[in-house]
Amino acid sequence: MIETAARFGSFPPYPLADVPRLKRELRAAGVDVIDLGAGDADLSPPPSVLEAVAAALRDPDMGRYAFQLGLPAFREAVAGWMMKRFGVQVDAYREVLPLIGSKEGIAHLALAYVSAGDATIVPDPGYQPYAGGTLLAGGEPYRVPLRAENDFLVPLDELPADVVARARILYLNYPNNPTAAVAPRGYLEDAVRFCARHDILLAYDNAYSEIAFDGYSPPSILEIDGAREVAVEFHSFSKTYNMTGWRIGFAVGNPAAVQALEKVKSFVDTGAFLAVQEGARAALEAWDTWVPGNVETFRGRRDALVSALTAAGMEAAAPRATMYLWTRVPGGDDAAFARRALTEAGVVLMPGSALGSGGAGWLRYALTQPADRLREAADRLSALG
Image (cartoon, rainbow, N blue to C red; front, side, top):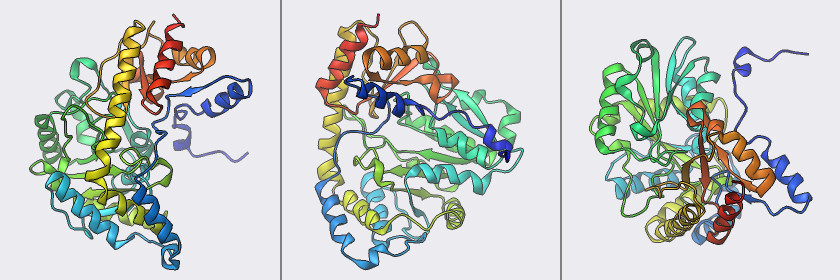
């Protein structure tokens, strides 16, 4: 048997890896499964996206290699949206890069900046590509627990000096997955200054910037003075436009970092399908007319689930952003509760510890089902005791 590389052995199991099998077995046995595990909503993209892609599929040029340039019209739409949404001016060809979903861009970034012996600063719990990309590059992810007493913010002033000295990338994600926390502007200013002072690249995962409630409007890191010198921001169409399987996103920000990521990608892919990039362009054009209604759907689901969980005697607070609820676990053992929820109640939940040891004792509920199904899930869970 040929042995795998040492770095391969350092990968933890991927969250919910065995859930598809268990769901299939339960459904085969006649169980009605309610899946609130993955952040994959049961909603459709804007109609104009479907129309744009349908037209693009009939154009032979849309089936050619995209390479890293991609579709110029998509790049220009990104630049236009960044100005309209955040008031940030970016160069469509030097500071924007199409991605095959933000996940691959986040994971590949470390290959340009991290060497053996280097560290990255990773929120724990957090999105798996932060640590995964670091490990693939041969570096060490320094996992920082996200605590309720710190409002789930990475405490930059408490990081060990030796870690900061070795750190090459700081990963931040606000609005946050899984905790649904948001970051005050002052904190983002501190993060930019921290990275500038220590010569660290700030990788800002802004996948949930458009799913926010009650008048809150999450910022871009590029709105912060000095961010252009130290930061690259990642955006995804998966959550905002219900395009999870389409695999399309973009990086924007520091031109040297964007171009370094572009070079890495030139060795591992030939760009996102051009027809999908055309769909993403259409999505950005529909942003101001279509997204508010989609967000309202998530708000209704949030309120329904919070109300149902509270009525069932479980802790639940309404988040200001994201498509998740982050709640303490009845009894404290998140993995055991999630297993019981699936096998005894037919409800899929994400145990916090599956996203890092810092998430132990917490559960993530994804607002990926209609309100009546969310209420049904809460009723079933209340019977677990």
